[in-house]
Length: 187
Image (cartoon, rainbow, N blue to C red; front, side, top):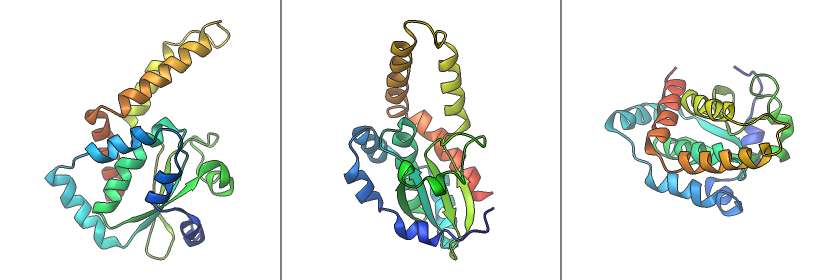
């Protein structure tokens, strides 16, 4: 848990509406997930309990990120039900903060959700993917040709295009994000 106050980062961030309006890539996918996502009664009970914490959050993201097109709308909807206001920062414009939340200590993987207590201190961090989504992409990448193969770049683009389509249309995948975030926020 960070002992750094993140209120200034929160104040710097955009609202979800402003972030969505600024998007040039993956807006359709993000909107689809946001509009079609549903919660169970159990989910709603958890979100109601979370709403008592007076939390807010900072999200490091970018519109080009396929994972963000899945995770941002899911967690935005969770935040709305949990009375958690999220503010959005573009990763490459906020590297000072991003570099405090590197995945595996090296990667600027996004999205990263930094949930803050009522005083602006880190309470929980989630991102960039659910474990199930990580396993899906790891398995898919294992099927790529060697990086120096002539068709590597073409095959990699095809893999990411298909992966983005799958994660933005399959409610079972959305559920893995819901469950992962629920476990993190309840912990």
